[in-house]
Length: 365
Image (cartoon, rainbow, N blue to C red; front, top):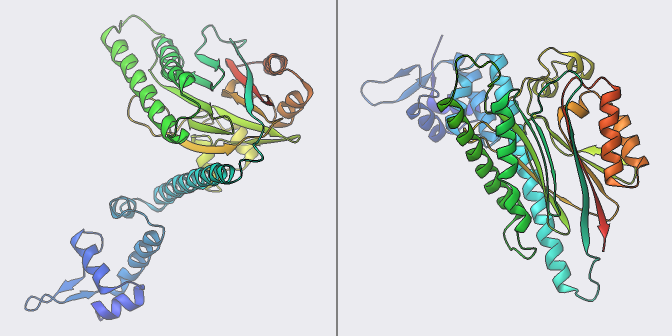
């Protein structure tokens, strides 16, 4: 088969010769032959598929180091990696869009001080209960005036301590000044880094005191979902399969995306929702706080009087249908009553796992 010059190959692949030379230097797309005298590169037409794949990934603004890794994967794993990358890009873009909206709102309010918006506040309740077939509780629920959080530690004493340490690391956010100019997303990102460090400390202590005769130690790993109240917006940070929902005008919307194997398969179209609900790997996480520097998903949501938030562990949402969650949240006037009825609904469904939830109302002062 006749080789193509670098110019002809570049045109066929919709790449520039400069890009091809860079990909050669990086080992991404070496030429099929190089002229020994003048160093001119030649390419095999069979390389066009790889070149076009690289070009497509570059159009997604994917870093070359990540492209190199993906190109070495089998197609199934490469598809999953591209899906993970784009999900992160979409989440980052949404967070920036929401932050821009917050800044526009603040500037508009400063430009028109004649009509100040009513001051909003949170009124919240937290509940945690041991499941009907569990003898330990690794779930944590916290409700303050500025901070809401739920965590679900991996089963065992280490997981319980990891969940407690992660939530405790966020408590300082309760004292964040209301006029703090820092972005709530930056504040949450830093707090989650502290929570991850706290989990790492738990893991170190567990390793140092491990007794080979003990069978319930588990691993220092936890999920964590937290809401930081700004007075007009809610900042959300999330790792794992704990969830946050928003009830607004009678409609219930999930605000977080699960970091789980079945969620990835759903996104890739490999599982239906019915298959995912009963899949034996439905509890397998793809991200959690384990002391290894896991980054949280971040989002900023504008708030309105009458909004109701639900944060919960999978001991609630995995056994109680979304329609039932909505019915309970719509039917209870008080956050504490709603939280109690949600726990009762989990128990009525068999409560195979521990249950933790926080219900919070946005009220006009």
